[in-house]
Image (cartoon, rainbow, N blue to C red; front, top):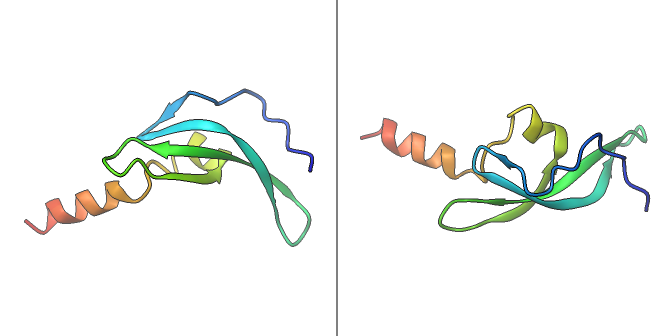
Length: 78
């Protein structure tokens, strides 16, 4: 499968708590539009590895595996 050519290699870059490991197969929408995806590892105690749209981490829309939300909710409820 061909991949969307990303303008820059994000491997090794850190966005919030996420470290980019590598580019993975693209997501293809029903309309046939391709979206570049990368595999990331969260720098939290669980070290969760998952794939996410490259533009979501560049735009700071995805900053963690969900651990950030859990921490902020727990802090709010104290």
